[in-house]
Structure formats: structure tokens, C-alpha cells
Image (cartoon, rainbow over the protein chains, first blue to last red):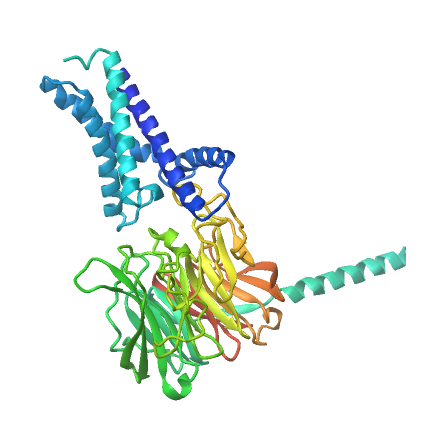
Length: 152
Length: 365
């Protein structure tokens, strides 16, 4: 149980970092389209500042925001898939993606259409965020496989 | 030794006088209370004031007394988030024509979107007549934040209207095919002046006067100079000198950070983008602005006053040319201050924010 919880937290951490990558990239790509001088050092420093800022200087830490639905979706999938004889990789990937999609739908719904994660304001951004969730689910399934829980 | 003591006493006396000359003794008089989110003030004369309440009303203080009934005939507004009945400004010839202008957020019919609109109307007793819509921001938005919605007349009789970036649409402040994050200039009847900076540009909306703004909620015209005041995100509130065709940088350059803690832009300056004459980090949530040119408070003559909501106070900014040389915090014993204006006699008016808001007159003791 402790191991499962640790795996869930680790998957959430990976998704958080990926979401920051998407958010920072989309922002810098837009600035680049205005011919602003974006170089490798700036990308790196902005990414690191975003990781710190979005998790420690935000009203709601991004990690917490992502963890809650992701852990809920993955844990529910784990419980449900115990009853079904199937490979769990795909359900976990789906659950990860769904958790991010849920977050991107729920947040604007709760905040009068405001989209606080700037990288998710476009459809491409939403797609990228969903893929981040899918990757989180996949990583979780890999960790579960290494425990031998994902065997058919 | 005796002379040294005398010199010391004289020095202390001079210093005390100097310090006192910076102190201003004033008192507050509440002239209207129990208001529902007073938002914008327009002064007719010393005893007659018009103001908006964000919840949708236009109210009058007539002969020094608050009229209980709101002005009738006002348009239906979308009172949600930061939206509602917002800016009010009087026509330069108001004493004769009784025309005023209202900026407000309004829902688009049959859709879930809304936009900023401006109407022109005649105030007759306590009722609006001859209402004409003269501006509607394009395109509509699905958020109820960052409308801007302040107005000022230029010396040539044209009207400047501030437009916010709509929060979700901040990048659009850098493109000229929309009104997000723009200050627009129109004639008082809604028609377009021919000399707007982008009027010959087929890729730009012809109303645009300046762009790259976030949420400009203060704009004044002082001797032909236009000063704009805008909310930053977490930090980066700004005062700019607004000139036609200029790009004020949002969100490509900013001194603020996003509310989610991320970097909006690593740049604070860039060629082709204007620098503010004043910015605040952290934010003070600036709400209204005036340039005090009266003599009732002679120490304050020529200063810019910025009302702020975080914390509730007023910032008095000493101007030298177009440079701000000093900042003083005053009126910090009230709550969040939503707008500021002065009466012809030199008294200062403050509108405090929120339900139960007040309009307070500041006079010297």
C-alpha cells in the first residue's frame, strides 16, 4: 500500500514537471514568435523558475492541483482493474489522460471560465496536457509492472 | 558652547518646520454610505456627483444628498466577476447638454459570451434618455475579468476607452485585430476619427489608439498628456504615458509574474515597447487615478494620486516633468479604495470598495 502511494506521488511529480515543460515551452514559443531573443540559457532558467514558482509561489501549488485528480483516477483504475482480467497499461494511460482532461474542464468550470494554467488555453495546449497525463499513467503502470501487478 | 546650543536649537526648529510642512492635516466626511460596490466617480460640481455601482446602478449625489433611487433607464449589465456597471464620464459640455457616457459589461444575446459596451445618454432629472450604444468591444469573451472600462476625453473632444485583456486572452493584447488589451479612441457619437494611428492599416482595427495593455483601470488627461494606470498580475502594476500607436508591452514584457507562480515573460524591456514611468512590485491593485491641480491642499498640487486596493490606500506621486520622483502613502486608514476624484473646490473624493461602500470627502482641517 505504501509502495502504491509512493508510485502515485511519483507519477504525479512526473506529470507536474511535464506540465511545466509544456507551459513554459508554449509561453516561450509565443515570445519567440514576436522575435524576442530566446536562447537555451533562457529556456533552462525560465523552466527552473517555473518549476519553483508554480509549486511554491502559487496560491495553489501545481503539484497539489495535479496530484488530486491523477491519484484519484489512477487509484480508481487500480481498484476497478483488479476485477477485470486485462492488461492494465492502457487503462492507466487512459486514466492519466482523463485526469488532466478533467482538471482542464473542472478548473474553468469552477473559476468562471478562467484558465489558470496558461499553457492549456489553446486546444493544442489541452492536447499536450492530456498527453502529459497519459505519460504519467504509463509511468505508473511501469512501476506497477516492476512490482509484478500488471501481469495478465 | 553657548552659540553651539543656540545653533542646535535653531537647527531642530527648522527641521521640525520642514517636517511639518510635509504633513497635511485633513479630515474625512462620509457623504454617501451603504453603497453596493461603488466603482467610478464623475464630478459635476462641488455638490453634485454621479457614480456607478458595479452591481448595475448609476447613482447621484444631488445638492450634497444621495438620491435613494438609482438613475432610471440604465442598460442591463452583466454583473459577474469583475464585470458590471463600470466607468462613467461626463461630456465636456455636460453643463449644457447633460450627456454622459457609461462603460459596462453586457451579455451577448443568446450566447454565453459577453463584452464591454459604452453608451451615450442624456441625464434628465434622475433618468437616462436618448441612449445610444457607441462602442462594443470586439470580439466577445467567455470570461468576466479584465474589462478595463475607464474613459477620458481628449482635448480634441474624442473619447478614449480602456479595454482589458479578458484574462484568458492576454496574447491578443499584442495583435491589432481585436480590442483585448487596447485603448481605443472614438468620437463622442461613436464614429471613428480619421487620424487614429492604425486607421490606414487593413490588418488593424481602426479604433485602436495604443496596445499591449493588461487591465487599464485608470486614465486621465492632464494638459494634453494622457496617463494610463493598469493592473499587473502578481506585481507589475504600471503608470504609462499613453501615446498614439505605442505598444506598452503586455504580456511580452512585464515586471509581474502569473498568479500561478510562472514566468509570464523573462523580459522587462524590449525595443519598440514602452516602459512605464512607474511600476509596483508587489502589486498594490491600483484602481483609479487623478492629477491634483487644485490649491486646497497646496502641498499636493501637481501630484498624481492613485487609489489602491491592496492594501487600501492612496499613493501620492510627485511629478517632475514626466518623471515620478517620490511616492507617499496616504489615506491608509480606510478600506480598499476603488476610485478617486477631486471636486472643483479642491476637496478629494474617495470611493471605498465592496458592499457597504462609501464615498468619502477629504478636506483640510
